[in-house]
Length: 223
Picture 1 (cartoon, rainbow, N blue to C red):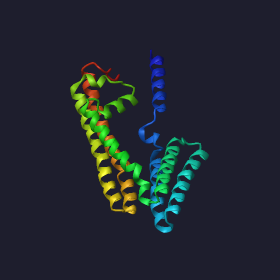
Picture 2: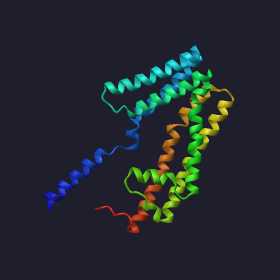
Picture 3: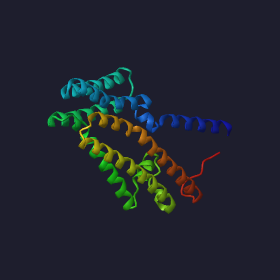
Picture 4: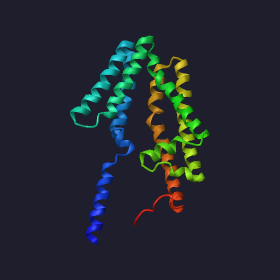
């Protein structure tokens, strides 16, 4: 019996090692820092050498980050996403001839995110609950408990506020032609605010799990 328990514990540990956290999927702390570099480089290079120099510098930095991760045999998925995002933003800015348009897609994506979060609460399918439980493989059992839905409603609305604040601030700076401030706002209101949102979602998930275990809708942890 003891050998069987030891083998089961070992299997559980191995399974736990295979699951990546959200931070690990983003490339760790280094990946988060790297994701901010192209926008920062764009702002600086645009101020020094103009729009074409800013676009080229941002693309080179994004490509360089992807190449470095490839050489080190690290996951390049976050870097490839960054290269694609920078390329699209650079293409829009190149087409319009305006440096501030480098941030245009991100601004409107924030508004779309805020609207999607609010609508999901209105239709009683809060996105925080859907996304969290889909990634943890628990499906939609949480919807059977009204209090659990309330927890995820709160978390979803917090995310809506975060995305809405991003849109409001950056749209104001966009209208004011403050390219440098736009770059700062994009970085400052990016992962730091998203980390706050994730903490609230984690709180909702923990509170929901406690209720679902008491109700017998989730298996209790073995001790």
